[in-house]
Image (cartoon, rainbow, N blue to C red; front, side, top):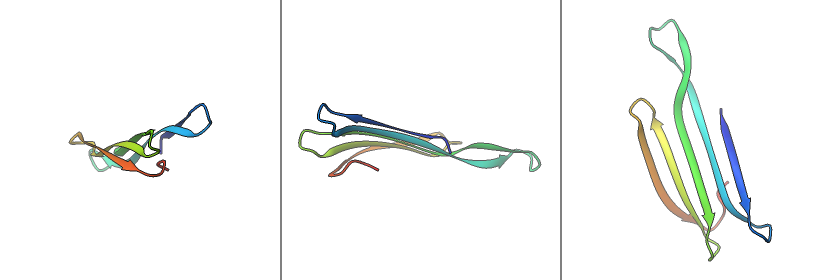
Amino acid sequence: MPADRTLGYDEDGAPCYCAFRFILTALKSDDGEMFYEAPDHNEALTAWRLRDKRWLIYREVVADFEQGVVQGFFSFSNAMPR
């Protein structure tokens, strides 16, 4: 599963930025004999710590690669995403 994570810190050493993404793959077949690995699900998240200590989170999900449908949404959290 390809994945990565990035953390950013302010001048006091406290986390202030967080980003991660991952791709899940599945075995697919065109003809029932030859199988290949193809993306099946993708998720990416970017979060920023606000001045009031809450986190603003933007999440993007691709649940259907064949249709190319991307769903993105914002949310708030009292804790850094894990």
